[in-house]
Each structure stands twice: as structure tokens, then as C-alpha cells.
Image 1 (tube, rainbow, N blue to C red):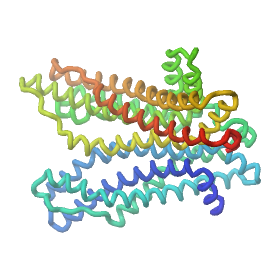
Image 2 (cartoon, rainbow, N blue to C red; image 1 turned 60 degrees about the vertical axis):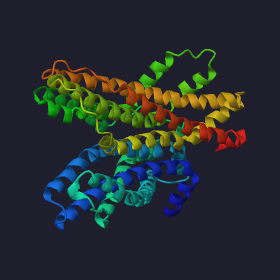
Image 3 (cartoon, rainbow, N blue to C red; image 1 turned 180 degrees about the horizontal axis):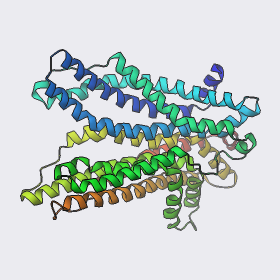
Image 4 (tube, rainbow, N blue to C red; image 1 turned 135 degrees about the vertical axis):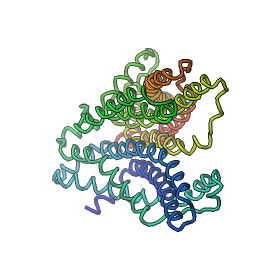
Length: 454
């Protein structure tokens, strides 16, 4: 089995490199946060910082840890599921070669475990180099902490490896089970399972997210102004968790609905891009959900901050204070970077299937220019779908928070964080364009028969 694992890693290097990049980025973020907290605990134990400073460090890192944790659960698990689902036909060939379903499942999980450990180790190395700069910035804001240094310790590093491996295995477990049960002939007939599957766990997560959002919306009605400002962000996040759980059902209808508004007649590139994205729903979901999460994060954070400042200004009669952009960068920078990486890399991972489809289109008479335009428009479809889903969530969450704020400050103005959402959309679209156009330009140089048989 070890030889098969190594051979499979070499066979589809692009797919596994993409999964490793996402897992490694998540591991680096976890390593930084773990290094800061463990260093603060060590310094407090040695009596070099006070208990109040320790509580301040832990309290300040709690929000980015929570946000990054939610992001990692969604994107790392999604990357693992995509890496397994994209090899549906390869797993069918394994069964035709005589492998039992149980061995197929064990081999897939072995691949994910090897990949997760390697990516986690690389991520920890990167995180170790960045821990002190981040900790130094944090301590520079507190006079009593200046001069304190942070470092990684073996226990926190081992915890990161365990967490990343667990996320990868949990994310790929269902896909591995399906891969071992699918009839080989059906898998060879089409690389994408046409059926949309919703597990019991997904329904539970969706119901939990929706219930949490509703409960927070009701509970905020009785909170003081400060409590609403501190907890308003999590209404949108709870709604995003529910959306991520039902993404296999939600992404395709939204994608088809808004792309249908743009006529495809006389636009063959748009026709190809629209139908390709709708057909490859597993890949589309993996690209759309992380970018949607990023849009919800930045939109909800900005809208809640702006509305809270508006409420305080209306009560005090004084202009709102300028936001602390450096603190915002620490709070939201890591999860936002991870969502952008995950969205673009998910598209890059599935490039082999896209190259094969474009080769078939060329064999039917399409020009390289048409193929390039279709690849670029696929990025537009992904980004547009993510933006629409994100705007809906942020708008609903903002209205809920606004209603709670207006109970205390009736003159609070509505804000939906449009500018930051558009900026993140632009960054996400740029990453998606690189992920679709780059491999396509390289594939166009190869012969059509070779691309079709790849």
C-alpha cells in the first residue's frame, strides 16, 4: 500500500500540492496562535509577565483563533473532500485491478494522512518564523510586555500536526467511503457524480448554524450596546456555517440563476464557462464556499463596527473614533488570507479535468482564444456566485444587528461593508483568474490527443 500511496502522489501532483498548500497555510496560522499562547503561559509561569497581561494576550488572540478555527474546518475539510472526489475514476480503476473496497478506503485515508503530516510540518516551520514578529507587534502595544519573546514548543507543534491531520481525515472520510462503494463502470462513465448527496452530519450542522443565528438575533435584543458590538459578527458567521453545510444544494441553483441572466447566444465562451461550472459542482462548491466565507467575514466585521460606531456617536453626539486597522489586521488577516488561498487553490487542484474538457472542445473546432476566454469566465462565475451568497448573508445579518442597536440608539445608520467586500471580491477574482488561466495557457501548448488521454 505504501508504494501505491507514493505512486498516487506522483501521478496527480497538482491535486496533492493544492491540498498541501491549503493544509500548510492552516498549519502555519495554527502554529502562530499556539506559539503566542504557549509563550504567554510560559512567561507567566516564570513570573516575567503579570496575570493581567496573560489574560490580555489570551483574550486578544481568542477572536482570531475562533475565526481561524471556523475557517479551517470549512476549507481544510473541503480541500480533503475535493482531492478525493476529483480522483473518482482513478479509484474505479483500482477496483477493476482487484482492490477491495476496504483497501481502497484505507489507501485514500493513508494518502490524506501522509499529506496532512507533511503539510503540517511545513506549516509549523513557516509559523515558527512568523511567531516572534506577530508576538512582537502585540507586545509593542502593551508597555509591560515589551521585550518579551515568543517561540514554538514541541507540545504545541504536535498539537498542530494532530489537528491538521484530523481535519484532513474527517474531511475526506465521507468521500473515501463513497469512492470505495461506487460501481467502477459508473465512475469511469463520468468523473463527476451527478447526484447531490447530503449526509446527516451536514443537515445537523445546517440546522445548528441556522438555530444559532436565530438565537443570537433574539438574544441581542436584550444586550447592552457594547455586547451587541462584540457579538454581532457571529450572527453572520453562524449563517455562513449553515450555508457551508448545505453548499452542495445551494451553490448550483444560485450559480445557474444569475448566470442565466446573461444571454449565452453569440457568447460561446460564456456558454462553456457557465455549463462547465454548473456540471462540476463539487469543484465549484470548493471554490465558491471559501470566498463566500471571506466576504462574510470582512462584510460582517465592517458592518457591525460601522453600525456600533454610528450608535455610540448618535448617543454621545461626538464623531465616531477611527477604527484600529492594525488590530483588525491581526483579528481578520489570517482567516481572510486562508479563504483566498483555498478558493484559488481549489480551482488549481482540478485543472487536469478542465484541461481535458478544453482539449475536447478544441478537437471539436474551438480556437485557443475561445478556450482562454472560457477559462477566464469560469473565474468570473465562481467569484460572482460567492459574492451574491456573501452579500445576502451580510445584508440579513446586518439588518438583525441594526434592529438590536436601534432599541438603544434609534438613529443608528445601516452599513453592509460594501467597499471591503468589493475589495475582497477583487482579490478573490484575481486569484481565481490566475488559477484558471495559468494552467490553461500551459495546457494549450500540449497536443490535443495527449491532453485528452491525460
